[in-house]
Figure 1: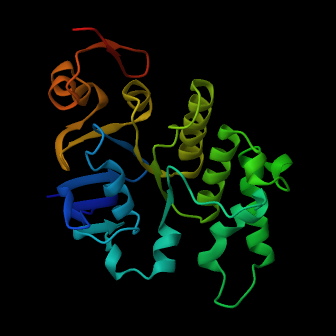
Figure 2 (figure 1 turned 120 degrees about the horizontal axis):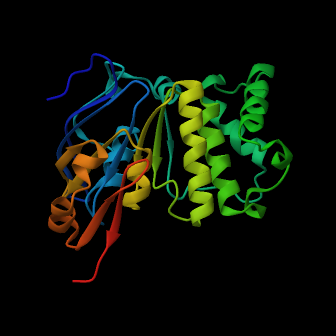
Length: 261
C-alpha cells in the first residue's frame, strides 16, 4: 500500500471496469511532488484507463489521493485546479481559435453564468508566451501542425494552474523531431513550474529518457516498477511484450532495440 505523505498522487488498489470488463485490476502507484513517472505496457494493459480514472474521467474502486485528499471528496472545480489531463485525442470544437481553446483551461475559476476576468486573460497570454504560441493565438486549431497542436493542448492544461499534469501518449501522433520537442518542453516546464508529471507512453526508449521512475502494467496489474534501468530489462520486455530486445545503456536512460529472433 502507498502512503500520501510527500506524494502528489497516491493510488491504492485502483480497479476499473468498463462495460463490465475488468480493465485495471488492483493497481498501486505513487508520484512524488515534482517527479515524472511514466506508465508503460503492451496494448490493452490498462494504461490509459488508469490515467483517465486518476484524472477523474472514469468511475473506479479503490483510493486516489491528490496531495493527501481523496479525489472523491473534491468538488469537480477543486479537482480541476489540482490536476490537468491531456488526452491522446482531445475533442476540439470546430473552427475554435487557439486563444479561446486555451481559455477553456480557466473554466474552474470562472463563476457559473460568469465571464472570464482580466486575470484569466492574463494567464492565457502568459501561457501562450511561455510555449511560443502567441503568434498562433488567432489561428484555428485545425490549421496547425501536429506538434503545434500538442503545444496548444499543453497550454490549456497549464492555464488550469494545476500542479499535476497527466499526459496520455503525448507523442503518439508526432514525428521524431516533434516528439523530442514536446517532451523537452514538458521537462522544462516541470523544472520551471514545479510540476508533477504522470504519463503513459508506447515508445520505451523515449519513455526511459525522461521518466524518473516507470511502472509496467500487464493485464491491468503492476508487474514491475522502479527506475527505467530496473524496469526496461530484456527479461521484463520478453515476458510482457513477447518480444526479443537488446537493451543498451544510453546517455539519459536505457535504449530498447527490437531484434529478430
